[in-house]
Amino acid sequence: MKKISLIILLYLTFTTPTFSQEKVKAVEIPSKYISLLLVADPSCPIKLDNPKVIKYKKGGIEKVFNISNFSKNSVLSFQIKQMSWFGNEELIMNPKATNENSFLPYESFSTLTNENEIQILNFEDKYAEKFRLTESAKNIWIVMVTEIKFLDGTTYNAKEKYESIENFVNNLKVTRKMSSSETIRKEMELNNFISQVFDN
Image (cartoon, rainbow, N blue to C red):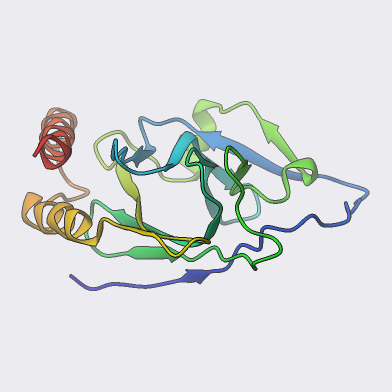
Protein backbone atom coordinates (compact mmCIF):
# COMPACT_ATOMS: atom_id res chain seq x y z
CA MET A 1 0.00 0.00 0.00
CA LYS A 2 1.35 3.37 -0.96
CA LYS A 3 1.38 5.62 2.09
CA ILE A 4 1.46 9.35 2.48
CA SER A 5 2.54 9.98 6.05
CA LEU A 6 1.98 13.26 7.84
CA ILE A 7 3.40 13.95 11.29
CA ILE A 8 1.24 16.25 13.41
CA LEU A 9 2.52 17.63 16.70
CA LEU A 10 -0.09 18.74 19.23
CA TYR A 11 1.32 20.51 22.24
CA LEU A 12 -0.83 20.14 25.33
CA THR A 13 -0.47 23.73 26.48
CA PHE A 14 -2.75 26.63 27.11
CA THR A 15 -2.43 29.36 24.53
CA THR A 16 -3.63 32.94 24.45
CA PRO A 17 -6.87 33.27 22.44
CA THR A 18 -6.62 35.01 19.09
CA PHE A 19 -9.38 37.07 17.57
CA SER A 20 -10.14 37.60 13.91
CA GLN A 21 -12.63 39.96 12.31
CA GLU A 22 -14.28 37.29 10.19
CA LYS A 23 -14.70 33.61 11.02
CA VAL A 24 -13.63 30.93 8.57
CA LYS A 25 -16.65 29.27 6.97
CA ALA A 26 -16.92 25.49 6.90
CA VAL A 27 -19.51 22.72 6.68
CA GLU A 28 -19.70 19.41 8.53
CA ILE A 29 -19.70 16.57 6.00
CA PRO A 30 -22.44 13.96 6.67
CA SER A 31 -21.10 10.51 7.54
CA LYS A 32 -22.77 9.00 4.46
CA TYR A 33 -20.03 10.71 2.41
CA ILE A 34 -16.99 10.66 4.72
CA SER A 35 -16.89 9.06 8.16
CA LEU A 36 -14.42 8.42 10.96
CA LEU A 37 -14.36 4.93 12.41
CA LEU A 38 -12.89 5.42 15.88
CA VAL A 39 -11.48 2.03 16.87
CA ALA A 40 -12.20 1.33 20.54
CA ASP A 41 -9.82 -1.11 22.20
CA PRO A 42 -11.38 -1.87 25.63
CA SER A 43 -7.88 -2.09 27.13
CA CYS A 44 -6.75 1.28 25.76
CA PRO A 45 -6.78 4.01 28.44
CA ILE A 46 -7.06 6.80 25.87
CA LYS A 47 -10.53 7.05 24.38
CA LEU A 48 -11.62 8.79 21.17
CA ASP A 49 -15.13 10.11 20.62
CA ASN A 50 -17.35 12.74 18.97
CA PRO A 51 -16.06 12.27 15.41
CA LYS A 52 -16.81 14.77 12.66
CA VAL A 53 -15.36 15.82 9.32
CA ILE A 54 -15.09 19.55 8.57
CA LYS A 55 -14.79 20.85 5.02
CA TYR A 56 -13.59 24.43 4.67
CA LYS A 57 -15.28 26.41 1.92
CA LYS A 58 -11.93 27.73 0.72
CA GLY A 59 -10.52 24.21 0.57
CA GLY A 60 -9.18 21.57 2.90
CA ILE A 61 -10.73 18.88 5.08
CA GLU A 62 -10.12 18.43 8.79
CA LYS A 63 -10.92 15.21 10.67
CA VAL A 64 -12.00 16.11 14.19
CA PHE A 65 -12.50 14.06 17.36
CA ASN A 66 -12.04 14.31 21.12
CA ILE A 67 -9.14 12.60 22.93
CA SER A 68 -9.56 11.67 26.61
CA ASN A 69 -7.18 10.12 29.14
CA PHE A 70 -9.20 7.67 31.24
CA SER A 71 -6.21 6.17 33.02
CA LYS A 72 -4.98 6.99 36.50
CA ASN A 73 -1.57 7.94 35.11
CA SER A 74 -0.35 11.02 33.28
CA VAL A 75 0.57 10.48 29.63
CA LEU A 76 3.90 11.71 28.31
CA SER A 77 3.29 10.88 24.63
CA PHE A 78 1.03 8.79 22.41
CA GLN A 79 0.48 7.91 18.78
CA ILE A 80 -2.75 7.87 16.76
CA LYS A 81 -2.80 6.39 13.28
CA GLN A 82 -5.44 7.10 10.65
CA MET A 83 -5.86 5.12 7.44
CA SER A 84 -8.24 5.60 4.53
CA TRP A 85 -10.09 2.45 3.59
CA PHE A 86 -9.17 3.21 -0.02
CA GLY A 87 -5.71 2.11 1.07
CA ASN A 88 -3.72 4.99 -0.38
CA GLU A 89 -3.18 7.30 2.56
CA GLU A 90 -2.11 7.13 6.19
CA LEU A 91 -1.76 9.95 8.72
CA ILE A 92 0.18 9.76 11.97
CA MET A 93 -0.42 11.99 14.99
CA ASN A 94 2.28 12.17 17.68
CA PRO A 95 1.05 14.46 20.47
CA LYS A 96 3.78 15.03 23.04
CA ALA A 97 3.97 16.71 26.42
CA THR A 98 6.73 17.57 28.91
CA ASN A 99 7.15 16.31 32.45
CA GLU A 100 5.72 19.60 33.69
CA ASN A 101 2.82 19.56 31.24
CA SER A 102 1.69 15.95 30.74
CA PHE A 103 -1.70 14.69 29.55
CA LEU A 104 -3.36 14.39 32.97
CA PRO A 105 -5.80 11.68 34.11
CA TYR A 106 -9.39 12.37 33.02
CA GLU A 107 -8.26 15.31 30.90
CA SER A 108 -9.58 15.67 27.34
CA PHE A 109 -9.15 17.94 24.33
CA SER A 110 -10.35 18.25 20.76
CA THR A 111 -8.17 17.98 17.66
CA LEU A 112 -10.03 21.06 16.37
CA THR A 113 -7.67 23.69 17.75
CA ASN A 114 -9.28 26.82 16.27
CA GLU A 115 -12.94 26.09 17.02
CA ASN A 116 -13.71 29.69 18.06
CA GLU A 117 -12.53 30.94 14.66
CA ILE A 118 -14.80 28.68 12.58
CA GLN A 119 -18.41 29.19 11.54
CA ILE A 120 -20.05 25.82 10.82
CA LEU A 121 -22.77 26.15 8.18
CA ASN A 122 -25.66 23.75 7.64
CA PHE A 123 -24.87 21.13 5.00
CA GLU A 124 -26.99 21.51 1.88
CA ASP A 125 -27.37 19.22 -1.13
CA LYS A 126 -25.52 21.73 -3.29
CA TYR A 127 -22.35 21.07 -1.28
CA ALA A 128 -22.39 17.39 -2.24
CA GLU A 129 -22.21 18.36 -5.90
CA LYS A 130 -19.71 21.15 -5.29
CA PHE A 131 -17.35 18.90 -3.30
CA ARG A 132 -18.00 15.88 -5.56
CA LEU A 133 -19.35 13.72 -2.75
CA THR A 134 -21.33 10.53 -3.42
CA GLU A 135 -22.54 7.77 -1.14
CA SER A 136 -21.10 5.04 -3.36
CA ALA A 137 -17.65 6.68 -3.18
CA LYS A 138 -17.87 7.09 0.60
CA ASN A 139 -14.50 7.35 2.31
CA ILE A 140 -14.02 5.77 5.73
CA TRP A 141 -11.05 6.75 7.88
CA ILE A 142 -10.04 4.18 10.51
CA VAL A 143 -8.63 6.01 13.55
CA MET A 144 -6.83 4.17 16.34
CA VAL A 145 -4.50 4.78 19.29
CA THR A 146 -1.48 2.56 18.64
CA GLU A 147 1.01 3.53 21.34
CA ILE A 148 1.09 5.30 24.73
CA LYS A 149 3.99 6.20 27.01
CA PHE A 150 3.06 7.12 30.56
CA LEU A 151 4.98 9.41 32.84
CA ASP A 152 5.67 6.52 35.26
CA GLY A 153 7.43 4.52 32.52
CA THR A 154 4.62 2.07 31.68
CA THR A 155 3.45 1.68 28.08
CA TYR A 156 0.54 0.55 25.89
CA ASN A 157 1.14 -0.89 22.42
CA ALA A 158 -1.47 -1.96 19.85
CA LYS A 159 0.65 -1.79 16.69
CA GLU A 160 0.10 -5.46 15.84
CA LYS A 161 -3.67 -5.05 16.03
CA TYR A 162 -3.48 -1.96 13.85
CA GLU A 163 -1.38 -3.85 11.30
CA SER A 164 -3.93 -6.68 11.19
CA ILE A 165 -6.67 -4.14 10.45
CA GLU A 166 -4.43 -2.52 7.83
CA ASN A 167 -3.88 -5.89 6.11
CA PHE A 168 -7.62 -6.56 6.11
CA VAL A 169 -8.30 -3.13 4.56
CA ASN A 170 -5.72 -3.79 1.85
CA ASN A 171 -7.48 -7.05 0.94
CA LEU A 172 -10.95 -5.49 1.08
CA LYS A 173 -10.33 -3.92 -2.34
CA VAL A 174 -12.52 -0.85 -1.87
CA THR A 175 -12.93 1.44 -4.89
CA ARG A 176 -14.73 4.68 -5.62
CA LYS A 177 -16.73 2.94 -8.35
CA MET A 178 -18.60 0.52 -6.09
CA SER A 179 -22.38 0.51 -5.89
CA SER A 180 -24.04 1.85 -2.73
CA SER A 181 -25.06 -1.68 -1.69
CA GLU A 182 -21.49 -2.94 -2.13
CA THR A 183 -20.17 -0.03 -0.08
CA ILE A 184 -22.59 -0.91 2.74
CA ARG A 185 -21.61 -4.59 2.58
CA LYS A 186 -17.88 -3.87 2.77
CA GLU A 187 -18.41 -1.42 5.62
CA MET A 188 -20.19 -4.17 7.57
CA GLU A 189 -17.32 -6.56 6.83
CA LEU A 190 -14.84 -4.01 8.16
CA ASN A 191 -16.79 -3.41 11.36
CA ASN A 192 -17.18 -7.16 11.96
CA PHE A 193 -13.45 -7.76 11.48
CA ILE A 194 -12.47 -4.98 13.89
CA SER A 195 -14.83 -6.42 16.50
CA GLN A 196 -13.16 -9.81 16.09
CA VAL A 197 -9.69 -8.27 16.52
CA PHE A 198 -10.55 -7.05 20.02
CA ASP A 199 -12.60 -10.12 20.98
CA ASN A 200 -9.51 -12.31 20.72
